[in-house]
Every structure is written in structure tokens, then in C-alpha cells.
Image (cartoon, rainbow, N blue to C red):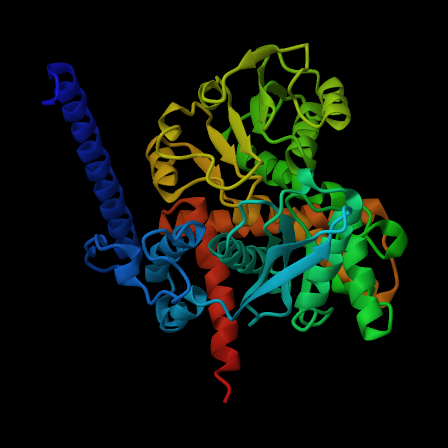
Length: 478
């Protein structure tokens, strides 16, 4: 049957939109290429138009047509390369993870049957020290995702100048479908499977999505039993009673708040009375929201997997966080208006904090964002295309690789305390955290001003330069 006039019109409109989006992407890529060339005092280079699979030597185990988060990371490295000077010789180091381990995780379920889960541990770069990065339990986790997250950990650790490389782990499991005893077996078997590449001086896991202090206790105990000695420094984010650090649970959210306050001061945004929207009210988003509210800001909108809420006069954060602890999400909270998931991105606010999962701010919803500042509490929440749109709109984006580095900073403190068996007070920890975050942020801000680039590119310039300088100084063995 031939298409109707209405269908022809719709198809024509869709084609126009597709062409407009493609032209917009090409224009933004050309703009970034011109900025990079200007920063190097050279003639602007043409923006790359070929697919990433043609620009990079990709690992054989990735699908070139669906690179996922790893493709986002590669684009970020491409953007920073022109600013690396003589260190650009080593840039391919950043595009090849040092080690990727895929393991089978078999366990006996409570009903006596046996289930198998796929697990990963990726060590992206170890030039500056042992690997460092979390372990997540999620049914949709992929090798591409873990590779990208490990790479962003390399960047993050170098950006705040802690002596770590980047690593990350994950298991393809929906933890909501399994008992606590089954999850313990998964954590312990996974730890045994990756035990040959982790250790206090090799690679130090930590909590991430759907893992917590208890998970780290199981992992630490399993590793210790396997080596025949207690090794508290093999993981961070443990309970305080077995070598964990005070302040670790709130560290990432406190770091988000710290850099947010510093950035607000530099752009003339008064935190007192500022309107804040937060996606995700876990440890990161919940802590950041509470600290902003205590500083006089109004939390006007929140969103998580259970729903979206709005209240123009500001939400009662104490009551909302208690509700989240009791019910597992914001859904069902009575003292607010409901929003659709899509409406959340267009709320009137001054600060937006995506603190859930990656890929949340896209080219589709970025044009609707009204915030003056976006603080990335999650890892990789903004796609490169959305990043460009926000940049063009004049929205200041505080990237994840600096904004949420508070967690790994206090993990570093925990690791140091475990080695020395001398533990600091929570006030000491918070003071040292705030100092490191402020110093790192201002170093990035200075580079951004120097090269006239956004903060994400500036953070990558700082971090990649440190990583590649370490690579250059160490040389290649043999």
C-alpha cells in the first residue's frame, strides 16, 4: 500500500530532523577542532567525520557498530589530544586497557540449583599506581561499560592527583532477584575469580552501583582467607569496624557539593536560595542534596527509578530522605507534585545534579535544561553530543571526573590508614577532602581559562598529561 499524505509528511519531517541533527553534530565537532587548533597556535584541523571504528584500532572483542560507553570515552580522548603537546606520542596508551578479565561466577542458589553470572575486572592504566575503582552489580553491565568506567577512574585519580591508576569491575546480575545469602556467594566467588589480579598493591576495589560496605566486607574476608592473612587494604568502603574510614559513605556527595560551591562563587551564583534539581537520591545525590539544602539552597525537583517529584518552594529533604530510606525510592512521597520522567529535565532550576547512571543527559533532553550549572554526581551521565549542546547554551558543566572524585579521595585516605594502622577523625578527613577537591578544581579551572575550553576538556588535559608523563618517565619494558 502506498504511504498516505500524512505518513509522507511525517517521514519528510523525520528526515529533516535527522539532517538537522547531523549538521548540528558536524558543526559542534568543527567548533571543537577549531578550539583545539587555536589552543596550539595552529591552523584549525577538519573535524573527524569517519566512524570511531575507522579512527581507532579497536579491540577485537568489541562490536565497532555498538561501542557503548567506551565510544564516548574515545571521543573525549580525541578532543584532548591536540592539547597534550609532545605527550601526544603516548596517547594510544589511553585507548588500550592494560588488562581485561572476564570471569564465570557460578553459585548454588537457595533452592539448590546452580546459576552462572558473567563478571568483569578491567585495569585501564597502572602507570601512576595500583588500580582503583568500584564493583557494580547490575543486570545490564557490559564489558564496554566497565572499560569506560575504568578509564574514567584513571582520569579521575589523576585529576585529583591521588597515586592510583584506573580500574573497575562488574557482575551481570539483578540483585533485587536474589537473597542476601545468594549475593554473598556471588561476591565471594567473584573475589576468588579475580583474586589473581587484585591486592593492596595491585588493584583495590570499592563499592559502586548496588554494592555497599557489606559487599566490601565479604570481598575483604574472601581475599584474606585465600592468602592466609587479614588484608584490610585490599578494598575500600568497608565498615569502620574492620578498617573502613570515617567519612567515606558521604565523601562523593560532599565532593559534589564542594566543587559546586566553588564553581557557583566563580560564576556569581548565590547558593542561598538557589534552586537545585537532583536525579538519584542514593549516597551521592542524597548527600549532595542534603548539604545544598543545609547551605540555604532549595531542592525543587528529584528523580529516581521510582518516580519524579517537584515542589517550587523546595522539598523537605529531611522527610524525603527518611522516606527514601524506608521505601527504597522517592515514589509515594506525599509532600510534592508528581512529574513525568521527561518533565524533570525541563524544570526551572539553577543547578542540576545527575547522580544516577550514565547516559542520562542526551541530545534529546539537553536543549530543555534550564540550569546554569550541571554537576555530574554519576559517572558518565552526559553524552558528548549533549555536552556540546550545553556548552553552546552557556551551561557550566562540572564533569564527573572532577565533581565526583570525593569518593576515591577518601578511599585513598582509607587505604593509607589501613597501611599505617593509624586512623584519623572524621573532621580531619573532611578537611583534607575539601582541600584536595578545591585545589584540584581550581587547577582545572585555570587550565580551562588558559585554553578557552570547557571544564571536561580541561580536566582531561590535566589528568592525561599526568598519566602520560608517568608513562614517558617509566618507559616501556622490556
